[in-house]
Image 1 (cartoon, rainbow, N blue to C red):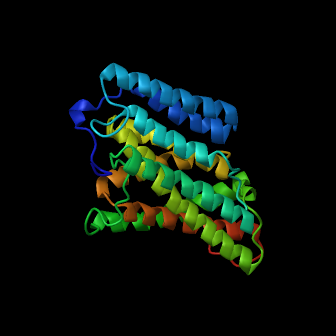
Image 2 (image 1 turned 135 degrees about the horizontal axis):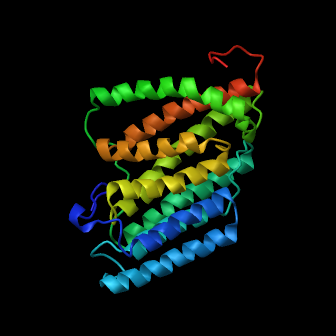
Amino acid sequence: MTAHTAVPVRERSTWTPKLVPALLVCLAAPALFVVQVVWLGWVLLALAVASGILVDRRLGVPVSRGGEPSIARDVSLVAIGQFIVSLIPLHAELDNAAFVRFTLALGGAVVVPYVISRFVYRDNAIRFPWRGGGRWTWWQWAWLGGVIVLGYLILPFYFITSGVYRNWPEVVTPELIARLFVGVGAVGIWDELFFICTVFVLLRRHFPDLTANLLQAVVFVSFLWELGYQAWGPLLTIPFAIVQGFLFLKTRSLWYVVTVHLLFDAVVFGVLVHAHNPGSASIFLI
């Protein structure tokens, strides 16, 4: 089963017992990354896995490995990823220790569920289709331009008027600016690897596309909140997360959604540099 292959639509329904473990594992994200009550988040993760096992047993689905998609296995992979991320603070820093910390935690949150899925559960549920979807169509190219225009018009107003740019370190030297560029881009790529290719794909094996997309958006937006997209940021990050899920379904291309995200992040990077250096020349209107 590929990253884009879900259970047939007739077998996927929102209002099933599987929704309980799925909601629990996704609601752990606000506990971990928004209100930041870590112990509560961990309890929700544990309850999600435990309830998933009960649901599988009720439905006669083997929990151990292979066969029909198991909600317990898939929820456990999402829970493991979130648990690993929760081991570090997510506020943006640009020193060497922070780069190592983010690399190990975020990298582990993608690699560990992938390894378990492939070599322990043996269901190959998680894949990263970089070259899927074929050649880009006219609307895909048009949307890339749209992302730049929307980012240019909206992001400076959001970051500067809300003051959330202060959630990122001051970047006043070429070295710090370079570190910010690398960090913003790396986290943007990771977002798609984890929230789309892991969380969304796993949930989509059990729920209709819209339900799975809304659930992954809860996790996506919660992570971005702790990262710094606060104040009225969710008004931007919620539609962004949902659109990224939709684009992944439509294009079947990880490379495309990563490109969209990196263009968005390029504008974020420019705004952050501008906000921390208000006296310098800028292309932005505010």
